[in-house]
Image (cartoon, rainbow, N blue to C red; front, side, top):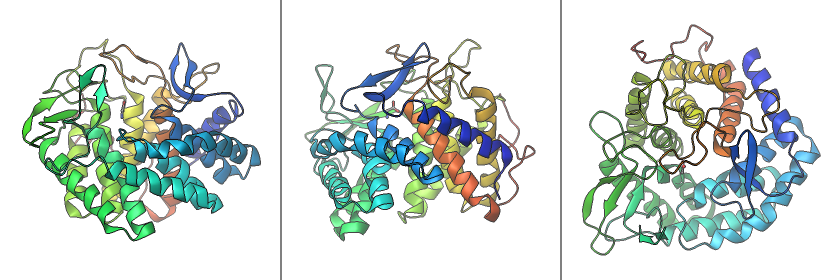
Length: 375
Ligand code: GLY
C-alpha cells in the first residue's frame, strides 16, 4: 500500500505532464514558469519521453504512449553522437524504457548504439569518458564530470542485454576514476576533475556549474548519490554502495530544514537560490540505497515528502516542481523548473509507491537529516 500524499503528488504531476502532450519541442528549463524547449532534445529530451512513458505505465492512457513515441522517434538518431557523455541520461528513460514497455526492437537497437557511442569516447590512458569535447571554444576533452556517474547505467544495461563485456568494463573503469578523483574525504564531490587528455595525467579539481573547485555543487552531489546507488543496484559492487552512502551522508548533514538544498552547499546565505532538482535526484538515490539499508528508505521518503511540500509548483506554472536552479554561474534557469527535476520527482514517487509495502514506515516522523544536525 502506498501513502496518500505520494499518490496525490504523483497524480498531480502526471496531470501536469498530460497538460503539454502534443506541444512541440522538448521541455528543458522554465522561464517565468513557462517551458523553454529545445528542437532536438539537447541533453534533457529523454526525461520528457520518460515522463510520458511514466504516465502511460501508471494510467494506461494511450495519449501518453503516443506522445512518448512521437518524441522518441527523431531522438533515436542521436544515439550515434560521438561527443556526448549524456547518452545514458538521454537513452535510459526514453529508449530503454520504451523497449521495456513496448518491445519495439528499434528502441533496443538505438539504446545499444548509444552505449557503444559512449564507450567509444573512453580515454584509455586516463580511464575516463570526458564530459565534453570542444565547448564554448575551449578544449574540455580532459574534463570529467561527476554527473557522468548517472550515465553509466546505460553501459551496464547494454552489457547485460548484448553480452558485450567491454561495455561493462568501460563503465567500471570510468566509475573507479570518478570515485578516486571526484569524491573528497568528507563525502562531498567536486563537479569537474581535469586530466591531461593526451597523457591521462590528473591535473586538479574544477567546476562549471558549482561555486568553486573546492565547493560542493548540490546537483553534482545528487548525481553522485543516485548514480552510485543505481550502479550498485545493477551489480557494480560494494564500492559504489559505499560511495553513494558517503555522498548521501554529506548531503543529509548539509540539508536545510526545509529539505531543499541551496544550489551549492557552499552558498549558504539566506538569499541563495535553491535547487529542487537536486532534492528530487537525491531522494530517488536515497530510496535506491534504502532497498539495502532500511533506515535510508524512511529518510528517502521523508526527503521526498519535504520536497513535495516545499516545491510543488503553483497553479498556472507549466512544470511540476518550482525552485530548481539549472546553472547559476551562467544565469540559466535560476529559481525555475527543470525537466530532470520533474522526471526524478515522478520516478522517486513511483518507486516509493510501488515498494512501500515491503519497506519500513516512511511517515512524517522519519528523520530528514541523518542525525538531526539540520542547517
Ligand atoms: N548534467 C548536467 C546538469 O545536471 O546540469
